[in-house]
Length: 233
Ligand SMILES: [Zn+2]
Ligand SMILES: [Zn+2]
Image (cartoon, rainbow, N blue to C red):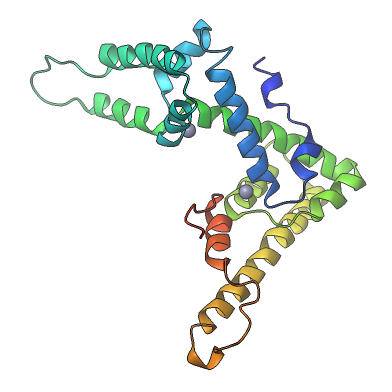
């Protein structure tokens, strides 16, 4: 189960050609891991040890609670709270705060079981993307036909491609060229759309066409952060 959960078919990720494909991959992995943690994995002792120690980030706690699985959420929280109580906070503490203890408390608040699993699954998929890109001309074409790659995922992709186990030499240059074109070209259109949007507030633009600029703020935020703001009218 643990191994199969991150094996998402590469065509499901790149086939739709709608938005950033890596955002799609992220969302698919996120849904799979949330199903997993509130389903089959919930009672597995080794998984529970991990969730007890790492906990979850704000976003993923909220997503878990919103799924409505009250008992599953409560069982996960029961042992997680107990773990914090036994290792991090002494209700009868005296003297001064301990630096090591503070570091451990901070560490807990920065760690998330689901985020870690998503990162692992993404890295796994990146390796498949790199090998398909270099060996399968059809996939290379599909990759280059994507609407864009958002900035955080562009960063992850080129970092992973440049690291150990990634790509080398001309294969790395070729991938870098394609990824930069996808992300950079979209950045240029965003910049133009935002400029057009600003110009439309000038009285001299009265009666002129807004073109593609009306949602350029939302699209820019999505490009910069991987997340669409939810205040679109
Ligand atoms: Zn993305
Ligand atoms: Zn998280």
